[in-house]
Amino acid sequence: MAATLSINDFIFQLKESKKVLIDVRSEGEYEQGHIPGAKNIPLLNDEHRIIVGTTYKQQGREAAVRAGFDLVGKKFVEFIDRAKELTEGKEIYLYCWRGGMRSNIMAWVLNMAGYKIALVKGGYKAYRNWALQQFETPKNILILGGKTGSGKTEILIELKDYGEQIIDLEAIANHKGSAFGGLGQLPQPTQEHFENLLAWQWSGIEADKILWLENESRTIGHRKIPDVIFDLMRAADVIEVERNFEVRKERILNEYGIFTKEELAAKTNGVAKRLGGLRLKQALEFLDENDLNAWVQIMLDYYDHTYSHSNQLRDKSKTLLIEFENERSCKSIAEIVRSKKESSKAPNKIED
Image 1 (cartoon, helix red, strand yellow):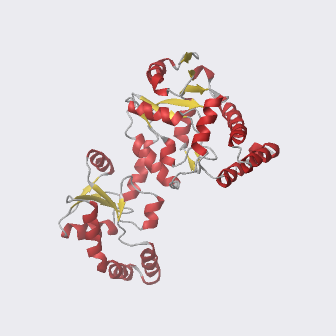
Image 2: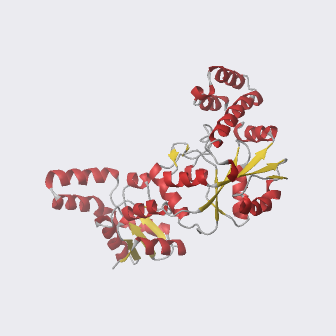
Image 3: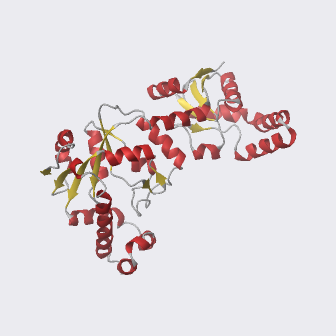
């Protein structure tokens, strides 16, 4: 007999344990969005769902149930074998869309095979409601800002190593934010799953401690930061990292110079309207001539202008400037952490 957990009890227990979590919905539903960490063992795959759905519409519930059992009954051994691959233990959490027939059937099968099963009451729908509710709980945000090539992500990671709370929005989105940010990245999650992943991390942040977030636009690639969080980010204090232009240019060349000129040209064309006809023509010509140094000069000039324009919307009294004269960012982490307590006061400047 499977136990049933409320969504809050489920979240708490899942975070505290290493039990396997199984999503028994179809692969298409799973790809659209799932509870972070869940593995997919579809009771009905996408094709089967169409068959059962069509049967239900044409012949009614009883016929649809019979069609479903006809399709999945022969796969029970496969389900057990897959569960065995996923865990050496005998305890499994699982869910479907609303905690109904699909999860109960899978629970019965695995229970008969000796597994102890816990079901999520309300299924994935309950998690989605829980996830969206997490964004209504504000956090004590401090923004790490800086122009393109300033090394903000590296500093963010160092802050985590230093014991600070961070959420790397770009890592969740599989995108580095700029027009070139998708190069070398995995495909972006759906908007729904981006929110699922963000909510999971958001819920683990202690509200009375600083949460560091990188300064982002409203969208990261094709994924949109939830409005309530973006509004908090725009109102938060800012630690602004400032690096020498040549240092930033070298960092960008090291990061993006590994891609082909065709890939870089395609992304450059992606900002054609904002770049302007003349600069676009020059940038593409430099790429064609393999003159990456001249190309990146144009792109950084463009991004610097865009960043400065965006920052005009911020309250300057909430910005603390920190200059880095070299690449040794870790040397100033302690300075950043100490200065955050002063970031709500008038702007200061700390030189490394």
